[in-house]
Length: 235
Image 1: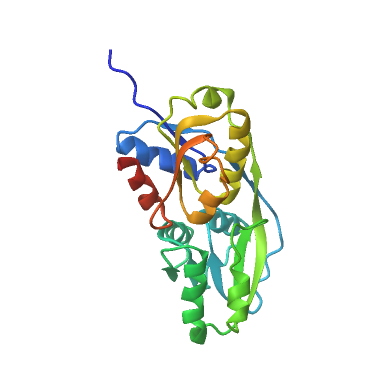
Image 2: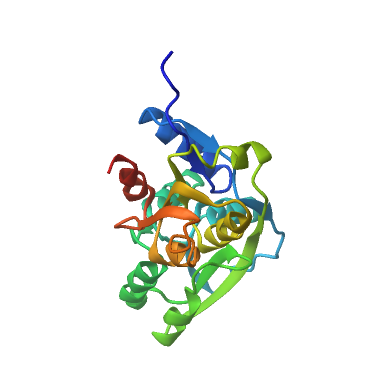
Protein backbone atom coordinates (compact mmCIF):
# COMPACT_ATOMS: atom_id res chain seq x y z
CA UNK A 1 0.00 0.00 0.00
CA UNK A 2 1.32 3.45 -0.98
CA UNK A 3 1.54 5.84 1.95
CA UNK A 4 -0.59 8.99 1.77
CA UNK A 5 1.24 12.18 0.91
CA UNK A 6 1.74 14.62 3.79
CA UNK A 7 -1.09 17.12 3.99
CA UNK A 8 -0.96 20.91 3.62
CA UNK A 9 -2.77 22.84 6.35
CA UNK A 10 -4.82 25.76 5.03
CA UNK A 11 -5.43 28.29 7.82
CA UNK A 12 -7.25 31.04 5.90
CA UNK A 13 -10.93 31.71 6.46
CA UNK A 14 -13.69 30.34 4.26
CA UNK A 15 -14.64 30.65 1.45
CA UNK A 16 -11.06 31.38 0.39
CA UNK A 17 -9.88 28.23 2.14
CA UNK A 18 -11.94 26.03 -0.14
CA UNK A 19 -10.57 27.79 -3.23
CA UNK A 20 -7.04 27.17 -2.01
CA UNK A 21 -7.89 23.53 -1.32
CA UNK A 22 -9.03 23.12 -4.92
CA UNK A 23 -5.75 24.60 -6.18
CA UNK A 24 -3.74 22.23 -4.01
CA UNK A 25 -5.75 19.24 -5.16
CA UNK A 26 -5.06 20.23 -8.78
CA UNK A 27 -1.36 20.22 -7.91
CA UNK A 28 -1.67 16.71 -6.51
CA UNK A 29 -1.19 17.92 -2.94
CA UNK A 30 -3.67 16.83 -0.24
CA UNK A 31 -5.18 19.82 1.61
CA UNK A 32 -6.38 20.04 5.17
CA UNK A 33 -8.86 22.89 5.62
CA UNK A 34 -9.01 24.11 9.21
CA UNK A 35 -9.15 27.92 9.37
CA UNK A 36 -7.62 29.79 12.29
CA UNK A 37 -9.84 32.78 11.47
CA UNK A 38 -13.56 33.10 10.83
CA UNK A 39 -15.23 35.98 8.97
CA UNK A 40 -18.22 37.64 10.65
CA UNK A 41 -20.30 40.13 8.66
CA UNK A 42 -21.02 43.58 10.09
CA UNK A 43 -23.94 45.86 9.20
CA UNK A 44 -22.73 49.48 9.03
CA UNK A 45 -24.60 52.17 7.17
CA UNK A 46 -22.91 52.77 3.81
CA UNK A 47 -22.74 56.43 2.81
CA UNK A 48 -21.39 57.01 -0.70
CA UNK A 49 -22.03 60.75 -0.72
CA UNK A 50 -18.85 62.37 -2.06
CA UNK A 51 -17.16 59.00 -2.62
CA UNK A 52 -15.22 58.93 -5.88
CA UNK A 53 -13.57 55.50 -5.62
CA UNK A 54 -13.52 52.33 -3.57
CA UNK A 55 -10.38 50.57 -2.33
CA UNK A 56 -10.42 46.92 -1.32
CA UNK A 57 -7.64 44.99 0.39
CA UNK A 58 -9.43 41.62 0.51
CA UNK A 59 -12.06 39.47 -1.14
CA UNK A 60 -13.92 39.49 2.17
CA UNK A 61 -14.15 43.27 1.98
CA UNK A 62 -15.58 43.09 -1.53
CA UNK A 63 -18.14 40.45 -0.62
CA UNK A 64 -19.23 42.19 2.58
CA UNK A 65 -19.58 45.57 0.84
CA UNK A 66 -21.50 44.01 -2.04
CA UNK A 67 -24.04 42.57 0.40
CA UNK A 68 -24.53 45.97 2.04
CA UNK A 69 -24.67 48.23 -1.02
CA UNK A 70 -26.11 47.75 -4.51
CA UNK A 71 -24.24 50.70 -6.07
CA UNK A 72 -21.54 49.54 -8.51
CA UNK A 73 -20.88 52.86 -10.23
CA UNK A 74 -17.58 53.81 -8.54
CA UNK A 75 -14.19 52.70 -9.84
CA UNK A 76 -12.41 50.13 -7.70
CA UNK A 77 -8.78 49.83 -6.68
CA UNK A 78 -7.90 46.31 -5.51
CA UNK A 79 -4.83 45.05 -3.68
CA UNK A 80 -4.37 42.03 -5.93
CA UNK A 81 -5.86 40.16 -8.85
CA UNK A 82 -7.93 37.81 -6.72
CA UNK A 83 -9.60 40.76 -5.00
CA UNK A 84 -9.99 42.49 -8.37
CA UNK A 85 -11.66 39.40 -9.79
CA UNK A 86 -14.09 39.32 -6.86
CA UNK A 87 -14.96 42.96 -7.54
CA UNK A 88 -15.64 42.25 -11.20
CA UNK A 89 -17.76 39.24 -10.28
CA UNK A 90 -19.71 41.45 -7.87
CA UNK A 91 -20.61 43.75 -10.76
CA UNK A 92 -18.01 46.52 -10.70
CA UNK A 93 -17.04 47.50 -14.24
CA UNK A 94 -13.94 49.62 -13.63
CA UNK A 95 -11.41 47.66 -11.56
CA UNK A 96 -7.64 48.08 -11.31
CA UNK A 97 -5.31 45.76 -9.40
CA UNK A 98 -2.13 46.80 -7.60
CA UNK A 99 -0.83 43.21 -7.79
CA UNK A 100 0.88 43.62 -4.44
CA UNK A 101 0.29 44.51 -0.81
CA UNK A 102 -1.33 47.44 0.98
CA UNK A 103 1.68 49.64 0.26
CA UNK A 104 1.45 48.88 -3.44
CA UNK A 105 -2.27 49.65 -3.39
CA UNK A 106 -1.64 53.00 -1.71
CA UNK A 107 1.00 53.84 -4.31
CA UNK A 108 -1.38 52.92 -7.13
CA UNK A 109 -4.12 55.17 -5.77
CA UNK A 110 -1.74 58.06 -5.11
CA UNK A 111 -0.52 57.73 -8.68
CA UNK A 112 -4.11 58.20 -9.85
CA UNK A 113 -4.98 61.06 -7.49
CA UNK A 114 -5.36 63.54 -10.32
CA UNK A 115 -8.32 61.51 -11.57
CA UNK A 116 -9.97 61.08 -8.15
CA UNK A 117 -12.30 63.99 -7.46
CA UNK A 118 -13.58 62.98 -4.07
CA UNK A 119 -13.29 60.57 -1.18
CA UNK A 120 -11.57 57.17 -1.43
CA UNK A 121 -13.65 54.77 0.67
CA UNK A 122 -11.94 51.68 2.06
CA UNK A 123 -14.43 48.96 3.10
CA UNK A 124 -12.31 46.85 5.42
CA UNK A 125 -12.04 44.51 8.35
CA UNK A 126 -12.80 45.88 11.80
CA UNK A 127 -9.11 45.46 12.61
CA UNK A 128 -7.30 45.66 9.25
CA UNK A 129 -3.89 44.04 8.88
CA UNK A 130 -2.47 47.15 7.18
CA UNK A 131 -3.14 50.90 7.17
CA UNK A 132 -4.30 52.09 3.77
CA UNK A 133 -5.93 55.38 4.76
CA UNK A 134 -2.94 57.15 6.38
CA UNK A 135 -0.62 57.12 3.33
CA UNK A 136 -3.49 58.34 1.14
CA UNK A 137 -4.23 61.24 3.49
CA UNK A 138 -0.51 62.01 3.73
CA UNK A 139 -0.44 62.30 -0.06
CA UNK A 140 -3.25 64.85 -0.03
CA UNK A 141 -6.19 62.58 -0.79
CA UNK A 142 -9.37 62.43 1.22
CA UNK A 143 -9.87 58.88 2.44
CA UNK A 144 -11.84 57.07 5.09
CA UNK A 145 -12.48 53.52 6.19
CA UNK A 146 -15.69 51.67 6.99
CA UNK A 147 -15.60 48.29 8.74
CA UNK A 148 -17.82 45.83 6.87
CA UNK A 149 -16.63 42.61 8.49
CA UNK A 150 -14.45 41.31 11.28
CA UNK A 151 -12.30 38.24 11.65
CA UNK A 152 -12.37 36.27 14.87
CA UNK A 153 -9.88 33.64 15.92
CA UNK A 154 -10.83 29.99 16.26
CA UNK A 155 -9.01 27.01 17.68
CA UNK A 156 -7.81 24.26 15.34
CA UNK A 157 -9.67 20.96 15.49
CA UNK A 158 -8.18 18.20 17.68
CA UNK A 159 -7.75 16.07 14.54
CA UNK A 160 -5.58 18.80 13.03
CA UNK A 161 -3.39 19.02 16.11
CA UNK A 162 -2.97 15.26 16.04
CA UNK A 163 -1.47 15.52 12.53
CA UNK A 164 1.04 18.30 13.23
CA UNK A 165 3.92 15.85 13.22
CA UNK A 166 3.07 14.44 9.79
CA UNK A 167 2.02 17.56 7.84
CA UNK A 168 4.24 18.89 5.06
CA UNK A 169 3.48 22.58 5.56
CA UNK A 170 1.07 25.18 6.90
CA UNK A 171 -0.08 28.10 4.73
CA UNK A 172 -0.41 31.45 6.50
CA UNK A 173 -2.07 34.46 4.91
CA UNK A 174 -2.33 37.05 7.69
CA UNK A 175 -0.37 38.22 10.76
CA UNK A 176 -3.36 37.45 12.94
CA UNK A 177 -3.56 33.81 11.83
CA UNK A 178 0.20 33.48 12.23
CA UNK A 179 -0.01 34.90 15.74
CA UNK A 180 -2.75 32.41 16.58
CA UNK A 181 -0.60 29.55 15.27
CA UNK A 182 2.37 30.76 17.31
CA UNK A 183 0.27 30.52 20.47
CA UNK A 184 -0.99 27.05 19.50
CA UNK A 185 2.58 25.88 18.97
CA UNK A 186 3.61 26.87 22.49
CA UNK A 187 1.53 23.96 23.75
CA UNK A 188 1.90 21.74 20.67
CA UNK A 189 5.31 22.27 19.00
CA UNK A 190 5.69 20.98 15.44
CA UNK A 191 9.45 20.82 14.81
CA UNK A 192 9.03 19.14 11.41
CA UNK A 193 6.43 21.60 10.06
CA UNK A 194 7.29 24.23 7.41
CA UNK A 195 5.42 27.55 7.73
CA UNK A 196 4.86 29.22 4.36
CA UNK A 197 3.90 32.88 4.73
CA UNK A 198 2.31 35.33 2.32
CA UNK A 199 4.51 38.25 3.41
CA UNK A 200 7.23 39.27 5.86
CA UNK A 201 4.62 40.76 8.20
CA UNK A 202 2.90 37.37 8.36
CA UNK A 203 6.21 35.65 9.12
CA UNK A 204 7.01 38.25 11.75
CA UNK A 205 3.88 37.34 13.71
CA UNK A 206 5.31 33.85 14.29
CA UNK A 207 7.90 35.41 16.56
CA UNK A 208 10.66 33.02 17.58
CA UNK A 209 8.78 29.81 16.69
CA UNK A 210 11.51 28.69 14.29
CA UNK A 211 14.42 29.61 16.56
CA UNK A 212 12.74 27.85 19.50
CA UNK A 213 12.24 24.66 17.48
CA UNK A 214 8.45 24.88 17.40
CA UNK A 215 8.63 25.01 13.57
CA UNK A 216 11.10 23.50 11.14
CA UNK A 217 11.32 26.65 9.02
CA UNK A 218 9.55 29.90 8.17
CA UNK A 219 9.60 30.99 4.52
CA UNK A 220 8.03 34.05 2.83
CA UNK A 221 6.60 34.12 -0.67
CA UNK A 222 8.68 36.35 -2.98
CA UNK A 223 5.50 38.22 -3.93
CA UNK A 224 2.39 38.70 -1.75
CA UNK A 225 0.01 36.56 -3.80
CA UNK A 226 -1.24 33.01 -3.52
CA UNK A 227 0.47 31.75 -6.66
CA UNK A 228 3.87 32.76 -5.29
CA UNK A 229 2.94 31.20 -1.94
CA UNK A 230 1.93 27.88 -3.46
CA UNK A 231 5.08 27.84 -5.59
CA UNK A 232 7.01 27.44 -2.34
CA UNK A 233 5.52 23.98 -2.00
CA UNK A 234 7.50 22.80 -5.03
CA UNK A 235 10.86 24.02 -3.71
